[in-house]
Length: 316
Image 1: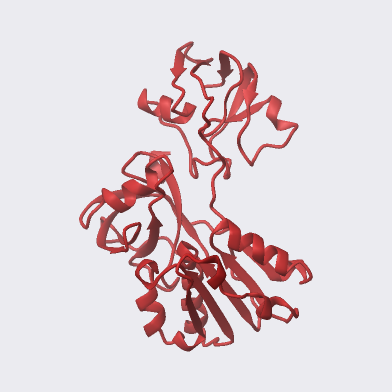
Image 2: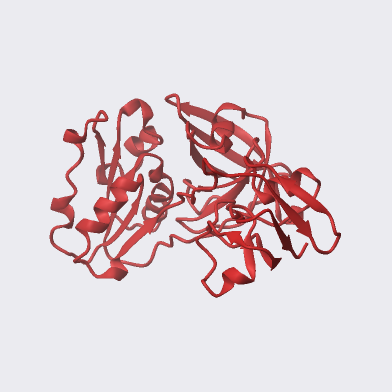
């Protein structure tokens, strides 16, 4: 796993309001970074120790830097807060190469709908289209206030600024942007949406009569890793015979890493499948979004799932 990481340095960090940070990352050794396509994300080992995924906001033509935006989740487990509050220019981070589950498909027309931090992959798409001379796209970007709008300056000064609608609702549901006029009649446009759960659900509802292949969503919202009734349990590692106690407030992956085990992972939110591990014995409370029903008797995602009883045995 460690050999896959790329070491990058934070060359610039900007705070946007109390909860958002924009970080520019460049390779420590001055080499070129792996290429990426618009809509890509990278995995980042946060100062808190967990892996999190962040979309790339800059132009795919750039090879010397990655640009990400982070929102500090005040009710989360601390990973995003550590990125916003505990990093500074000059710090070294470890990242995984870009992956893309939100590809920009060729089309004659695009409608981009973003809310909050969801502008990040869409901004990269806009840079790509503008570089290609493609101007037939519109961006609707909704936030609560100008103060908390990441990349507002970039959007207002970009060569595609005329294509952008910035809307601030002040946190008042009565002032939400009305998306229906843009979605009422299906067109040839491909619609890309990334933002808060409520916005994405609204767009799904309003675009239900559109051709399915024209509607695209990006959602990094993780599964519910921690629950109030979690309790500690034991993991028996078959290969070494070691029995490890997993505390109620930690995952199997986190506990084993603390014990020095080098384990593969990526999202650490039960959505990517990187930490899939053979289950040899015991009942599991599966919390992932990856395993099929048939696989759940034979595998466990150790980043989120827990023992349903006192002990499980895994092939490590």
